[in-house]
Length: 294
Ligand code: R5P
Image (cartoon, rainbow, N blue to C red; front, side, top):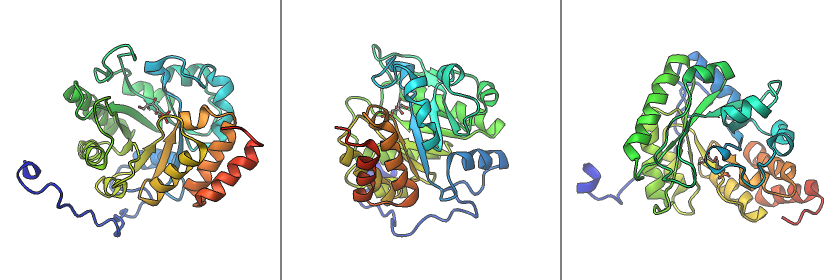
């Protein structure tokens, strides 16, 4: 109860001092077992960064715009992504097993967009993640949501399952409609997720204090994309997130809902892996998209 009784604003994240990685190139992973490290090395490049392509939306939204035909819309983008985030149904039915991407398998589900989303459960068994050869499993965590305790229990169960087989867990901060995406909320949620054992965290970017969110989270923070933004805004968000301590991005609609998704994913990749400026990444997008309007 310390923060409830003391001064909640007097925090010191030392954002200028990077966290020691413990002899391994991925944040907070130095003490993990071999299998975990091996799987994380498939998600992250040698630079400790990742471009993850999210197309798991159908698990609660059905055929979202841009994902009507994953075989046609997403498979051609796979060579530009380090990792693919999807459900087991889409992976088995559509994603070629010959792809060399790391697979981040959606492990939670239950309610559709017609219902209360925080009422999720684990929606697969960890042994299926082993069969699929998943590099990680992903679960929504509704901190502050109506079913907060249940969703945290989903995650801790998945963490225990994952530890048994050496499969890392990606905890995803799921922001309900009444919750503000500010650094205070996101920092609370990402820290809880890491403290309770997830080896990776996915969260939204916020304009103020994102570096505090990253510094206060002892495992890799992967920036979530969110709804489609103008090209420059989306690239700026990715750039700032990386500059402020994220270990990668997991973008969906900002890539696959564009006229030239192959151009966008390469422009994002240039920021994440080559440290391109926003201007250079935008130029790359314009060149590769050959005049796409969005
Ligand atoms: C996040 O809650 C889910 O994993 C989504 O289905 C997906 O990751 C969202 O991606 P984006 O917001 O970038 O379209």
